[in-house]
Image (cartoon, rainbow, N blue to C red):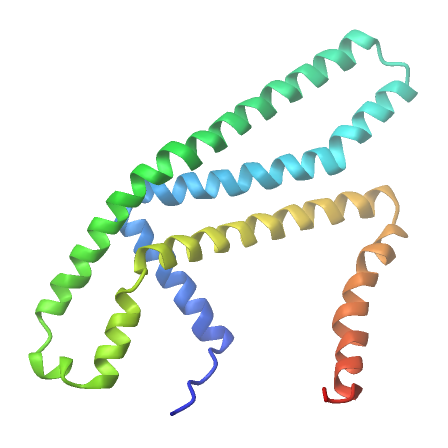
Length: 199
């Protein structure tokens, strides 16, 4: 059996862009809601990890009136509640209803293209195998790929903001931030290269 070649970074990126464009063409609402859920999730995480406790600790230290601190906490709770309700609405209402729309439109498009293919192509085992693999769970693969890409973009943005804020607080903190990366990607790589093969 012929071994399939691994995807290069360029091919993987092209496939991800294709998945987002395809889902955007099938349901723009789905992409927008997924992007907002990912964005709000990481905005909330970044806010509580960096800004919320710093404000509360600074306000107490500076002698800010209790009513001001209480109002600030109340606004934060209200916004967090809104984000939680919106996320639950998207996951439990928008996505299940939209799955039907994406599924029907996608498979209608796939089968319309399949009608234009000559019957002799289906006699070719390689073509038939690739076709059935493409059709099998296509809508789930496209939506999951798009979701992961949007979450990666949101996570990278949140990480940049968090590390920038940490660097502004104390420049020495960057050493604690970078040390796991250095340990995993540099020392871990050399340790893997010199490790004994498994018995």
